[in-house]
Amino acid sequence: MVISQTPLRISLAGGGSDLAEFYKEGMGQVISTAIDKYIFVIVKERFDDKIILNYSSKEIVDDVSQIKHELIREAMIMTGIKSGVEISTLADIPSEGSGLGSSSSLVVGLLNAMYMYKGEQVTAERLAQEACDIEITRCGRPIGKQDQYIAAFGGLRVFSFHPDERVTSEHVELSARTHWQFGNNLMLFYTYRTRNSAEILTEQKSETKQKRKIVEAMLPLVTRIREALLAGRFDEVGYAMHEGWMLKRKMASRISDSEIDEVYDRALRAGALGGKIAGAGGGGFLLLYVPPMHQERVRSTLSNLYELTFLPERDGSKVIFNLRRYRVK
Image (cartoon, rainbow, N blue to C red; front, side, top):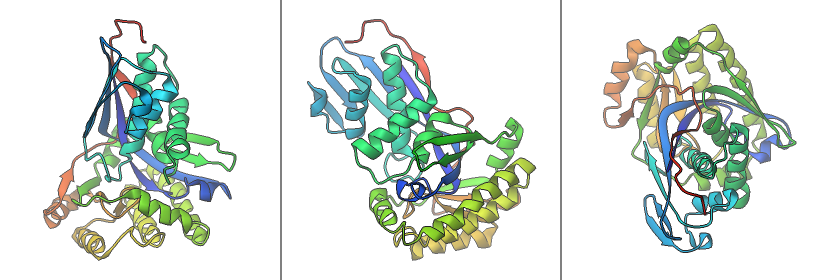
């Protein structure tokens, strides 16, 4: 049996520039941090040749080609696991439409667990590259690359997306205490609204050329946030997030609406300095930057929403249990 633990993430700035439609014409860049909420993948050998999958549904099949869950199917094909296995997935948050990168964390965690199940340890770079291949190329999902990379690498990082498909990573070096202090200024609230991120991202991708200048205006915020974090000027991060959200709302029609705007405005009046809907927008989690002195007032103002407490996570995807007794089929 092998168990992998893969973090979810929050993106602070630069989202949208990790789409090929943008970085193919000029480098994209994002700043993201992993958080201490996870996707767990359990891979266990069976005594027979069946394939059993346990997620929000249950599948029992005889051949990989019969698997309905496309991400698990493609991960099995990529790693060469063909039969005699039971795979279970567990998540700390709603599995669909959260905006915290859960699908990409799932793929990275699947690959990590499956390779270790076969006795092979692979790099974070390879996990991220192959997860992108599965989601973007093989499954045709209209998403970018940032989620797979932060899930694999962990920590607080700036990722740069180059026209030749290279992705370079810079670890933003904060002490553990400073990283915690910054994370303590962030709040997440579940809006009780899920959304189909593919629909929003498909519209955003189709509009990328026409709205390229909006994404380009977001890019300086990545450097601004990075420098503010290194200098300990945390409140500046909140103001930069607000500017980024004002820009992002213009990228597609369903990123925000009157209900989301009203909740966000209430949070600002209660003391939040900035924020955004996590991920593609339209629902899921609302991320806010709130100085500690105002957090109780924001919490009270948004009492109709569910608060998810969290802290930044320094590690990326990792295997937390590894007991292989038998030869893999």
